[in-house]
Length: 90
Image (cartoon, rainbow, N blue to C red; front, top):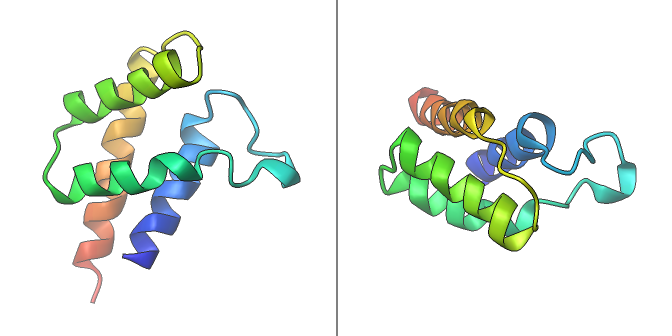
């Protein structure tokens, strides 16, 4: 689980990055509050579309930003792939 949490955290910070703080040393934990739910959704078998909608809700409802649109689909796919890849490692 710890590896998955760190992997999700890294993807959110470096690839999703709706507020662009990846290079800000004091903001490396900016998206950490979203990690547990994303982890739960992935282990429960969420599909890319549903996870992308979840990311969009975070952006629009919680952060008050515009939706990342199609970018959320790419990030959702990447999140699922990263966690699945960890499960396949020996």
